[in-house]
Length: 385
Image (cartoon, rainbow, N blue to C red; front, top):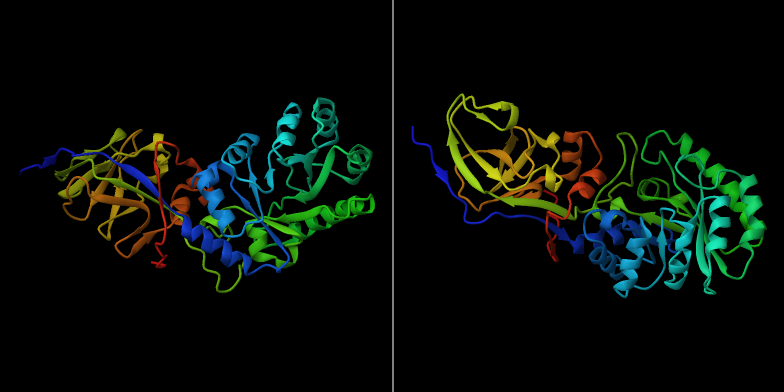
């Protein structure tokens, strides 16, 4: 038996980002909303792994009224790139960072009476600090917990150097078929919103709907929705949780690698650490230059891949910098293999990979780090394959 081993001309791995699809997803979601409902594009975690600056510019081009990020550092990057307009930081920052937020017109969440008191103590600039009151209506993460805490804060809010732009909460179970806790959270949240309005803040923007709630509960759109995952083609709903009929969101992220080496192995030969895969017949095996250090989970072993529109399979344990693929036939070094996305009329969805590794699509996207270069693609329509 002749075993063919071919040395690589080059190694390559990359993600393709379809910004035009992001924009079309925004348009599709906006059509579900009341015409006077503002749209906040949530770009946490480097734009869900798509690139913060690129996705921010595309979201604005598509008509997003405001942006949200996960950290003050991300908001400052946007301002440094001359991106204007409202930006809300969703994760509370240190009170000693309020001056830099005020100086850059960045809105911060107020999550407790203690945080507000410390922030007022640390603030030295005369520029006003823009804030949104974060209400913990049941998520249990952070936020103002009840009406008593909010009432104690009202006097501190009535000062010239604070602008109360909004009040918001986050719904813990909007993705689930049972909406009883969604309704309970909304009841609690509405009570605190009423207190704020009656205290002299009638113009605070009220928002509670993330992607799942924006798709399922149009009555919860309120003044503004905060859409993150669905910008990128993800419909974050559990089985039985019905979304809008006819909604078609396009995936914005695909993952590819070129064959690094290809070889034919004999029956009985094993592949990878711990010899978890043993060939039952002669077969072609390719090595790809992507592994768990790039963010490809070791749990992806056994997952499907696509090469030239044909199905292949990841075999053996995923290595730190490489993985191995059982090919349907011989393909030369440099051939593109698709791990996520479309190839030759077939498609591997982000949801499919997430189910394979026992997680959610958002984790898959945000786990693929900077070792995977992003290539930005426009005007490539989604075929729905």
